[in-house]
Image 1 (cartoon, helix red, strand yellow):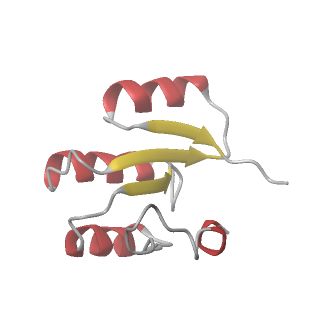
Image 2: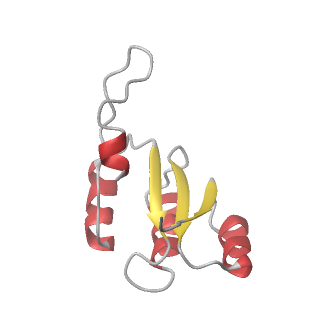
Length: 101
């Protein structure tokens, strides 16, 4: 849905956004290792199993040492404890709940 909404988006005189998608942690790792100029990662905490998204966040920050990419964790499971843990321990830039409309 985000890809479709932003397909024609342009910021100032910059080239259009390139949106990369991964539906598994393996694909996400592949994309992250091949692209060092990713501006934003929207990451489902439960991409495959519980806390996979948190592990990927840690990988981005500590293994490939990428401090520039903004990471926003997404979840459909409301949990104040999980949100606090993510914000305090995983160097993320945002935490958002997904809603079904």
